[in-house]
Length: 89
Image (cartoon, rainbow, N blue to C red):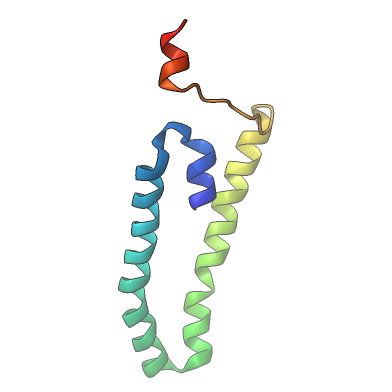
């Protein structure tokens, strides 16, 4: 997610990356107790079946993003101007 954020939202900078990283840490902190209760209630195999859904969903989402970007001409490097360079124009 940090890579996608860095590539798609260039001007977000460190603040946007910190927000995405913090969101990921928060989601892990919230889901781990739930996963532990699944493990305690249903056993390891059933808990794994519940947890295995997330990579499938993320594969679909990132696949859609990949093909969307590819339909627009693929990845193209973008050079951001500094504030000093932008003011000299």
